Amino acid sequence: MKHAPTTYPVHDLIRKRWSPRAFASYPVAPETLNQVFEAASWAASAMNEQPWRYVYAHHADTEAFQKMVDCLLPGNQPWARHAPVLVLALAKTDLGNGTPNGAALHDLGMANANLMLEATALGLHGHFMGGFDRDKARQAFQLPENLQPVVMLALGYLGEAEQLEEPFLSREKAPRQRNPLADFTFHTQLPS
Ligand SMILES: Cc1cc2nc3c(=O)[nH]c(=O)nc-3n(C[C@H](O)[C@H](O)[C@H](O)COP(=O)(O)O)c2cc1C
Image 1 (cartoon, rainbow, N blue to C red):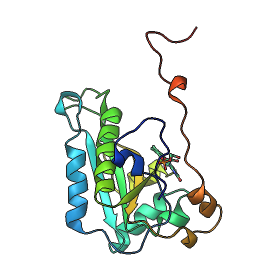
Image 2 (cartoon, rainbow, N blue to C red):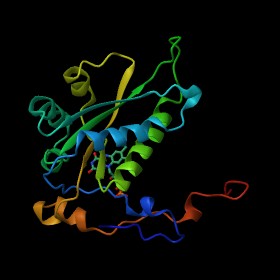
Image 3 (cartoon, rainbow, N blue to C red):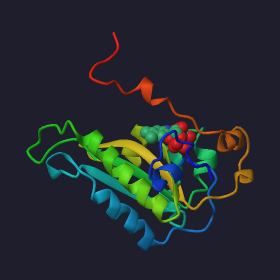
Image 4 (cartoon, helix red, strand yellow):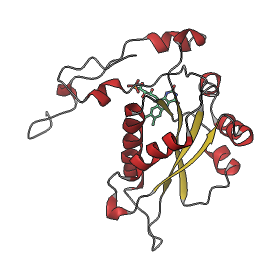
């Protein structure tokens, strides 16, 4: 566990969420996964468009799971291929009337945050990955033009750090850090 060493007290779920690379091999029950996706669905979204879409595969879905693994870049494949579930998160970038939805990426992020906090509450861990080949994902999952592949996610129960080889082992054990509030919050105006 790598609970966030916060300066101010924050909700336990926020403290507990972190992005491991070592996952236990046991599966995530379909019911549990649905709970996690249900949480995603209750995120706010512009005009209640709900522009998030998720394609997922359990480890046991051999063919689809391998397609997901093949989309990942080499820095993610060695550890993420052991995750019990891989998810491809997509943003629907147009509105019903065909005009662009400028909030699609924002709203997918909102849904992803909900998803991850619910997962944390259920004892799961997740690790988002921007390191994947978007063109490959488009082809592999036959995505229409208006669905943008944004991020992938490895999801499951926490494993032992010692399962990992370097450089992943060191990253798993590295302390967590954040910028201080003064670096990104500004009372009334930005500094000149
Ligand atoms: C959009 C996004 C893309 C990311 N891409 C990768 C990735 O390709 N590989 C990786 O190991 N971690 C990736 N991460 C995980 C971040 O490195 C991690 O969230 C960050 O270092 C903070 O650590 P924490 O999640 O444990 O608090 C990504 C996270 C996000 C939100």
